Length: 115
Length: 115
Image (cartoon, rainbow over all chains, first blue to last red; front, side, top):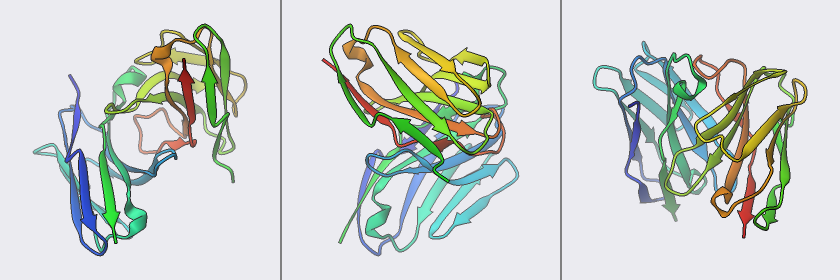
């Protein structure tokens, strides 16, 4: 069964520190991997989308990496800010026929940044 | 641009009551989706519409119906609400059908409680 697992479930860091969130997946074949940020009470917002051939992609202080051989991705946040407090969701896209096979969501990592 | 707009933002229903959740997007996207989000679980697809006039069941369609009124609007109806339908509902849209490289654009959700 296609699955996406994220770790840790939750994380607390101090403002200004760096952190790394992990995403492991068993989806095969694979089209792309996405990271979304979801603020409390809001819908998810796309941060990055990486295809099979991309190893890294940045969006400001957010850098996502992808190792398609080991089926692992990470999201690195540099110099964290209070506004980074949110849930981060990993989503793997697959070239399935049925729409339910096309987007597989992880359960998210909840990040809290304290001053 | 407003993006994806959902109404209402909050709703409380009694068991057996019915209601319709409204969603509209102004990005001229063909694909639209309804997801539910529950604590500790990833987003789960309820229904999907690839284009005006077409709808497909997702992972958890029981107890729901949808209407793709036109290209902009995609509504979700609960005919007889049950406590198990207490959740946060998100509407989303995308240029492609989820398996491509286009991101999903989400609304800010409807928080539904069924007592």
